Length: 188
Image 1 (tube, rainbow, N blue to C red):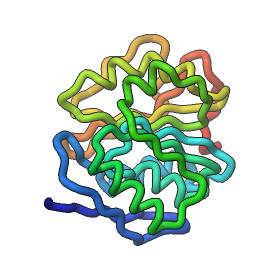
Image 2: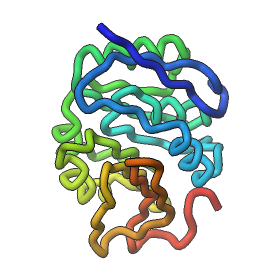
Image 3: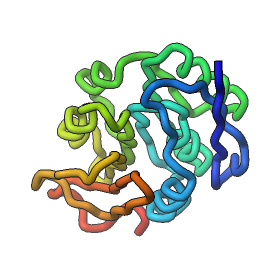
Image 4: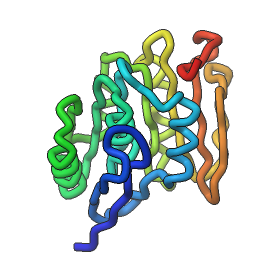
């Protein structure tokens, strides 16, 4: 089995390597995009609870942990990819991570927890982002935000406000907040 790797780019675990198996639809958020995202968020996530719904390589969730997030929930369906997440969590000695082996859509349908930050980075060729984005509003704490990544520009309804957005190669990425949410972002 072929394995790939990505480096954590900032925080406590900066330069540590995360290894993951090749799997259909799995492509980690590029370094440049992660760097921009965490610049938007203000680098330090201390006291923040995060959900990485389509964990894959774990790049977003482990990056949040490295930046001192209080907790990170990572959901991954594929058994071999899930085992790689477990190995990465163990290698990083991550104690504030909850790894859930299961289907993201099933988790999304039953989730009642609230988070400061929700990462939504499903396989681009799927319709999963469109299916879970409406549910994500119910998972956010009052100051919460959603990071969404897609292979094409997102068409958002009036319920979301784009707080920040960018494009890197074929990656379109957004930091969103509910339209009725607070005026200030997390980075303030």
